[in-house]
Length: 293
Ligand SMILES: Nc1ncnc2c1ncn2[C@@H]1O[C@H](COP(=O)(O)OP(=O)(O)OP(=O)(O)O)[C@@H](O)[C@H]1O
Ligand SMILES: [Mg+2]
Image (cartoon, rainbow, N blue to C red; front, side, top):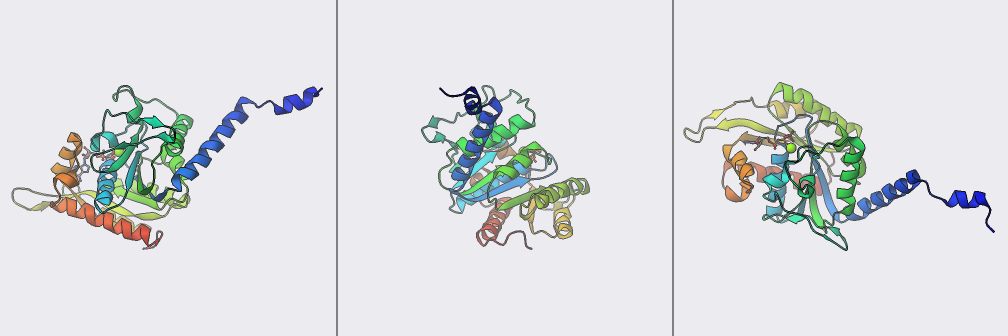
């Protein structure tokens, strides 16, 4: 007969069982992510500077360049990617290989906490560990299939979600940093660059969004919020500058309607800038230049 001590040793505590689950999830993250060639986070220390807009448009731009693209909305409290990508209210289905992302009309695969909520206006009131667990599950349980690019839209700040994504994603290509053209934005966004550096995530480059406004009637350019801060910051931080996207009412109008700005306005100046920036990112990550200038 087995002695009592041996039987006790074999009994797994709830903590050990949870730890085993986490290790299994992390193994699955590595397996899933090995099918994704390039993983790029879009971040900024500052809120409302256009991270989600930039992430969604870069995803569509990359798809237009012929890549297989996914976008993961890792903003747990303020998810906005489903609305911008026109898939709000849709439900991801599950199968033997995991949860399938929603395929948007522009060929981009989309996952967000918003797609799992009964009512998209319900708030998600979670603390750090639950948020990390949700992000781990998005990376481990979603069957993205083979992708060339996975863009990850981060919430503002340098808190739980960016930290979870940075810790969990193996072999990330780097971070695209978005700033508005104000000194206040520059001050806060530098924190995001420093976080990437501390976490050993290469900085792919800085985008200055909401940079000037071209009057559609007279064609004159007005620097409503300023201009040039992104380039200045990139120089100060010794990272690349990727480009300036102007304030364009069509960008926000299309986001609100859930239609792709790039598909609706392919010949506009702002669309051309998005395509140029996507092309730059493509050549940077595909040539593996890391964060060098
Ligand atoms: N270049 C632009 N021209 C016009 N409107 C823009 C531009 N970029 C973003 N917007 C608008 O600004 C608002 C904020 O953008 P968005 O939600 O992408 O910012 P965010 O940085 O992701 O915000 P959060 O910090 O809440 O995640 C949206 O209404 C969006 O449509
Ligand atoms: Mg956002």
